[in-house]
Image (cartoon, rainbow, N blue to C red; front, top):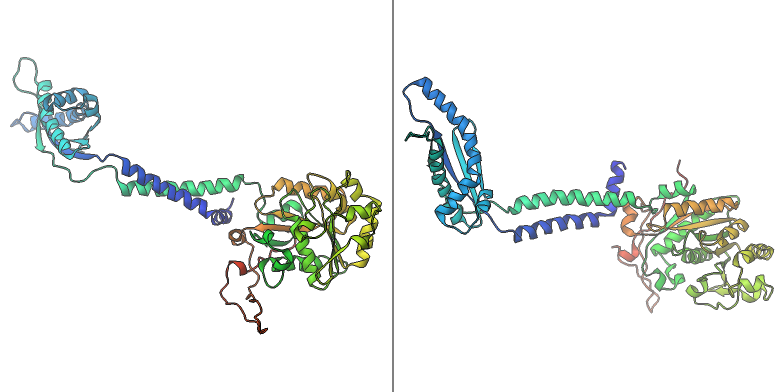
Length: 484
């Protein structure tokens, strides 16, 4: 992935990245709030050797003290001193726990030791630090006094007693939140990039065109209310759904200026990609342009056209193919009669054979003669062969692909299946594109408009506010043409 792809992935999934970031901050805050605060108190010790008037001896003594001071730092953190401190204070703490709470450091290039004690109680931290200084001085005197002598070769003196700490040294809210912010940002972006890398669904126009080797002829934004309302009503006026399908209609008409495709099969790779609503919508907008259109319910396994349009579904295509009814008897006109619908009829035991028969070829020819366009809603390509069979009989196939759902391999197999039967893949419709992804993935907006309000009783038409809402958002215009 290049930088542009990283930024596009972050823009598309910024909610996930932000959630991880906020979760990291919240976790750091909870941990900080639940952690017992610790206070630190320090005492300073000076290490020296017995004085001498000889400068050379004094220098040697100073070097001896510097060599000794490193070893003393280890002794301060050891168990023997911790035992002495516990016995001296008679406190309820084990020597192991106390030794782990003591840290010792040497002030660079000096003979000064600093012993620091951390404890939940500031008063006890101060008391233990002072006691450590006193006990360690006595401990060194015992260690450094040669047998048979009364004077130690090294002396430790407390030069700075411990002060009462006023604020805890841990936990630090600012430090913890800072670390959490950095880790949360890295984790959020990393998860977004990982999700993008592992996601094998199609989203981008260029990607779809490269996989299918066909042009994207349109894109439809996701509309949760589309399936809940009559389709014909939604395709009136300047709704974003209407404009999207008008764009598809225009692109289809310009695929071949001299001989545009007139008999279209609408299919998809798998169920649930919106092929039926696309077929109905395309037929409606074609009829709105003044063309005579026949919409054929060619999905004989799971017919949905008559259900969505709420028309009679008992008789139709299979009756005509079986010779039990004439075409004129089963065609159902809609609206002003520019659009007629041929339902599927009773479900046959052999859909593929019936759709690939000579009777079906003859029926398509008859529908072509009496209509400007014939739109056939077929079965998905991968589960069954019905769509490929129909595609070979017609002018071409429009393949519907669902944004973020259809897998790359499914799209590739569908395109290969159509070409294997010499069906003409006219183009791809990228369906159900989320509004947030329309910008993130480069589906630029072509134009804007002002929606009309309903006509009042006196017939006066008033224009809607110029401020757009979610229902009147601009329609995405996808780039057509194959990738170079």
